[in-house]
Amino acid sequence: MYRTSYSTAGNQDEILEFMQQNNFITLIGFDGEYPVVTQVPIQTVIHNDSIKLIGHIMTKTDHYMAFEQNPSVMAVFTGAHAYISASVYEKPASVSTWNYKTVQAKGSIRLMDSEETYHVVKELTNQYENPETSPAAFNKMDEAYIQKHLKAITGFEVLVKHIDHVFKMSQNHSTKNQESIIANLEKSEDLVAKEVAKEMKKNV
Image 1 (cartoon, rainbow, N blue to C red):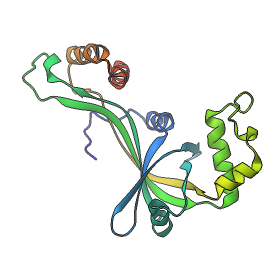
Image 2 (cartoon, rainbow, N blue to C red):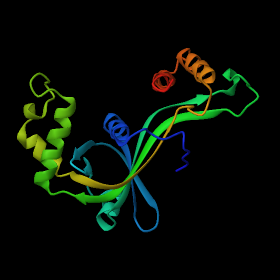
Image 3 (cartoon, rainbow, N blue to C red):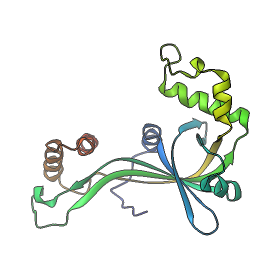
Image 4 (tube, rainbow, N blue to C red):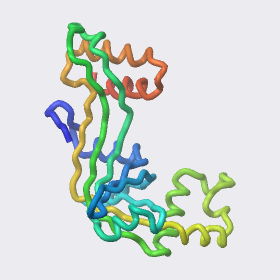
């Protein structure tokens, strides 16, 4: 990971908040020959000094078997990102760049039994479907239907041991440059670029 002194968060809480807000992660393992990758939604659970990433994967896939034989994994959290054109700088004959936020969390994965997996699916579903009002809520599903689909998945828990991050939002540029970048991004039709503008405004 390429990091600079200006592209880091002010405190750990900012990093953890980013992880909780960007919870569709890229989970990476190693099968002994090649990296294996899967993209999954997770819950970032913080308790005292421990950070755990909880979700589920399809059973008997390449990543499942890799995690089974090698518990060392990396989770990559990615936020909004955008191309930053030097054409809007005070001195436009400069190098253009890319603004982005990302967190890499390294840790050890534990695969769960069926009872734990049941609980993981329930919690993750309830995070997005209101148990009281949604017709797709977990408690509205037929139990036989749930048990049938549980046979194809396995819950997991990653105990995070190390976190790296880059929050690169043109902090190394003058206030005038940053304001010009924000204005340019806000004119874009790209919704993700507009999100980068919002992130940049927090620093100006």
